[in-house]
Length: 295
Ligand SMILES: NC(=O)c1ccc[n+]([C@@H]2O[C@H](COP(=O)([O-])OP(=O)(O)OC[C@H]3O[C@@H](n4cnc5c(N)ncnc54)[C@H](O)[C@@H]3O)[C@@H](O)[C@H]2O)c1
Image (cartoon, rainbow, N blue to C red; front, side, top):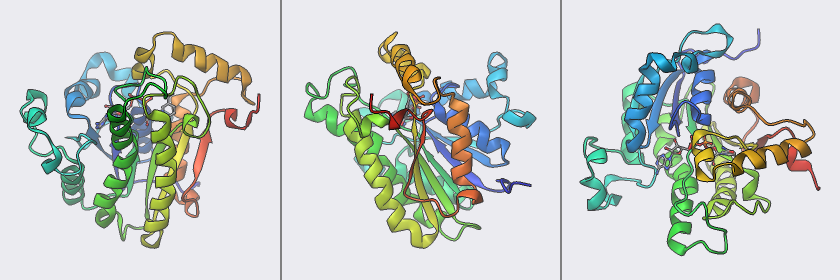
């Protein structure tokens, strides 16, 4: 038997926004391998995610692969990856009714709550990205937009792992984190502006730095560089454009097709498993090989 069994492992998954998010598929595949799934979702989408997890209409999307039943999560926490502690939250956000119903939605508060309630964290998934200026080219991006994209999409991994280190230390077989990146952090993808290309470049070196700092605690840190995928959020940014870039990549990739989100989820399960016990500080391309092409 291939030793992938996450029974009794606690997986904290960030970045589920709906039932098309990469993080949704990752949650399902981790759950199919037996992990306890705990979600940390942006405060504004907690209600939406709850309905995807319970509505009859969405039952099909909750079905786990390999006939392992239906996705059930232990708990959903609200977490806004802009804030390391509640001291960082500005008054206008604190009083916003979509936030005010949660006592602590900072990274530190969320990780502490998960770590204490579930007795530790074995797997941490970072699947968060945001740029207010995503439709702007890199040249037109403002300093404010750039810094915000960098903070939410890249620095949050460092903040999460700093907070999670005590809860990820001493886990049976070690612990691991997997984040999501994109080729646009290494090569010029013209539409990937608004600070996002810089954020992915930063995320990639940050993941390597974190792997080096946390390796002595047997905490592994890897990234998956996913090929383009028209998640609900990605489709809505520039209607029609995402589909075009998927077709473009598909027609030029060694495997001449688009990726499926389940393929990213499978690779995540592998990276979190004992089969990947010597793999850390790596970027694994799940992109049908597109990244190697010169033309
Ligand atoms: N879709 C693609 O083509 C593609 C390709 C490569 C990498 N990625 C990466 O995969 C990850 C997931 O993207 P996706 O395609 O599943 O889209 P998605 O929109 O479903 O996921 C992004 C998530 O980030 C969350 N988020 C945004 N700002 C946040 C904040 N301040 N605090 C907490 N959460 C916040 C959103 O709520 C959402 O759930 C991202 O890092 C993205 O850059 C996507």
